[in-house]
Image (cartoon, rainbow, N blue to C red):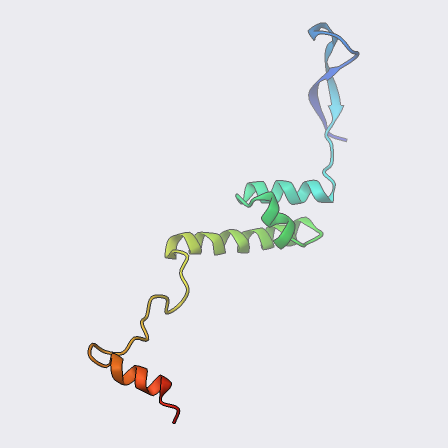
Length: 106
């Protein structure tokens, strides 16, 4: 069993109640692994709850890497929709013909 140095509160009171001692290294539970992986990849806890669904460390890390890569691509390329900004307006002078074609009742 691995140990670590810890400062623990021995009883209620002031700083004199703090004790320096050896303690076992804690093992993270499933939810704690999720948070650790999310923080390592710069993912918010809200996004982690939604998008990181793996139950083991390797799966969580793979999902987190994909999510982080997608976010990096979005930041690099901008948050745009394909073909955003293309106009379907007719050429100059064709507005009247366009309006007639919409409301002609043919």
